[in-house]
Image (cartoon, rainbow, N blue to C red; front, top):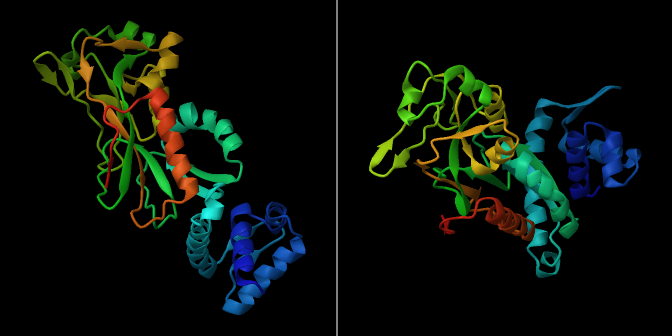
Length: 309
């Protein structure tokens, strides 16, 4: 038994959910995949998978082993792509996690061009705004808005998101148009709250006009932790929104959102790509980071393009 082939077969069965689908993706027979997994179980002397006619499920031992195998296979893949001969053509699986609006509006629509340039890179893309344990979850990198507080990560600043304040026409018709940001703290108006993954509290943004500076602390009837749901709530008229320009642009053009307080300046939100300091920057990770930076240069150019550790 080739131990590496067996581990790859086992991991693919778990990810595909069946031996048949795993065999198709590996381009081998179902019998071969079945034999490799059986040989692996015999070597380890544990049962890794529970098999029924309808599904394949991990055993408790299998779940622990799978987590170790995924990390090991990723390290092997990185080691291979670090060689000069392999680096010429980036390839392999890349595990990333990105905010949901960024994925929907910027990243995924641009993926056909990326795939045309790098057809041998396979994405496993988590779409969320939650805090990710990059090492524990075997994630190569995350794209995040806001300062990176985890000092253990290497973070490359790839852009600065300009923010604006918006509300739907229906909301403004019902509640009136606020003329000053302080009105958002009154009883007449509501905001849509966005919950911080780090603190669980609603995020707030400072505003400035000349010497006047304030941080409106409005009340909300809804707070969410997902960017797409946040935008949907504003479009539904549930309150006033703080949005990056790229998220608001289409809705403003369609007349679905109205910008407010345009003579006020809001603090920009930096955008980072972050990865573990002990993670080898493989060719596939390097081209992904450079690609994200190029996308941000179009949609939200960095005010101070720096990398920090």
